[in-house]
Image (cartoon, rainbow, N blue to C red; front, side, top):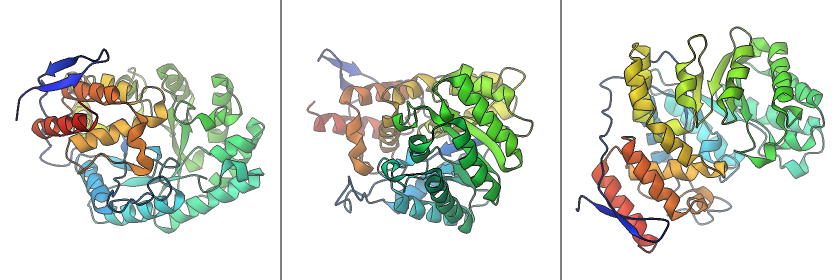
Length: 387
């Protein structure tokens, strides 16, 4: 195979590209971190069984579970059935239940494996939600399922609640009602409208400070039931403002796929734990960086994690909700699945030049685990695009 590859540019010309990256070595044993690190994991389609990919996408359960073992071996906890799994964008509640059930069973077979499961209201269409009670019942359905299966819940933001709520008090009512019922502590999820436009004005206001006051009041009123909160607003100043005001014992989990390196490192006074979709795509790098941070080797932490940030910013560029395509593209390039096919055909959500940029940035960030395979698959991808 040639050591170079012809990559298209925006002006229609071709660039002769030679890879420069060095794969990150796998750890000899499961590493230890001094940050809680959840990787939000994707699901793998089964294209041979995917007869209705837009409506009833088929999942390759063996490949999907194998990817979770890959993450556990690198020291990560898993945030299961979240938006990285295309929750509400290709994976419906029925599919999420099967995913949660299988992943919890798989985790029990792996010493030290841990995960938390997304529980939301996505089986309730926002158009069908008529009242706050409808939203409460929907949350109860999903959280009770997770608890019956022996799992812990991440309380996902609700499109239905955003649709019916008329004030911050409506959010206090719904969250207070659910949190009083949960068996275990849960992680709350503040997902910005760049990830899901239907969540605009969540917590009852489009003003950040007003929304912050509301969510902090919910946490304070239910602090014995809240492990922490994941914030995904892609603005580090917003996250620091939240982090600085959280009650003692309530954790901040960064979901900022633009600024995670500095937020995890911290400011010398406080730091963020992590619940990130990008960790799916850059797991070996993130694992090495986090292990180095735990060992007090800040220089290695920075040298390994910082090159992944430009890659993550490309994957999560607007329209941000289509970031899943870049995550799965890298899983395919790195040999974790045999194809680049996604539930609901979401691989079509990004253009060819976007994927070319991801390939370049992944190589420069040392994220291509098997460079020869990645080159071969990138060439095959470009052929299907007419190059």
